[in-house]
Image 1 (spheres, rainbow, N blue to C red):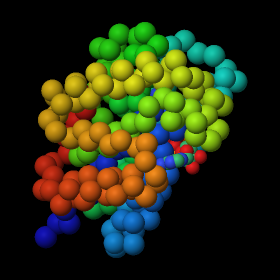
Image 2 (image 1 turned 30 degrees about the vertical axis):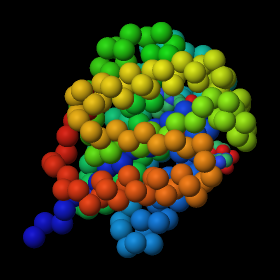
Image 3 (image 1 turned 30 degrees about the horizontal axis):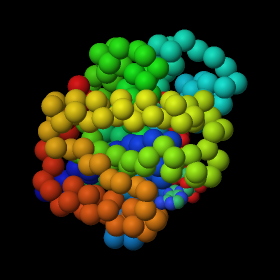
Image 4 (image 1 turned 90 degrees about the horizontal axis):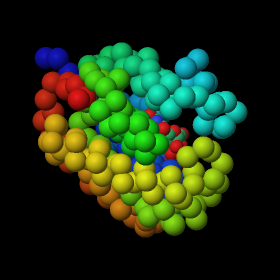
Length: 213
Ligand code: T5A
Ligand code: NA
């Protein structure tokens, strides 16, 4: 019998909502459970497209809003085959950000929502999106806030509003895959909520691979 495919679980949230902290713990916990798992960070700053994105985020270079939007999407496309291959082989893939950030951040800058969705059309659809929310004051109080391009309270407030629109669009097109988790508590408290959402996804029968938008 063919091994069941792996689950594709995406983490999203505002800057400093604790995504990376939670994702790392989750990967360790799943591995300790004996599950094959791979972490995929977006942007993947190690590719040549990723290095352009990194330079932009560190404000070492400037790019037109549409150009950087397309680079973020291209960065997902260059990783999409590897994600699908791993899922098909039964590996659980955990992504630290994905296309939902792409829409929320670019729409917050004023790009039309329909333009923001378009280049990601056809990317692998996650089985579950775990969206970590913290109010912008809590995010701003966490370490090293303010070093990169979008890390101001004003931008983060607008991004948060756009994420609500993205959540509605996901619900409308793809049903109940979006889980919003309040991440203002301690790392352990948040991990318990994350674990509950992830185990409910892993225990469900997931369908054949869907497509975004
Ligand atoms: N972007 C991204 C786009 O515009 N378009 C796109 O398509 C994509 C994919 C880079 C930027 O790119 C934008 C969005 C971003 O602005 P990134 O590299 O993921 O994205 O950068 P950040 O999200 O800013 O990642 P951070 O590492 O800064 O934030 P995390 O991962 O949310 O938070 P984490 O876990 O690193 O924690 C931050 C700090 O808080 C502490 C941690 O120890 C750490 O010091 N912390 C807590 N403190 C108290 N209580 C808790 N529960 C805590 N959890 C963590
Ligand atoms: Na992060």
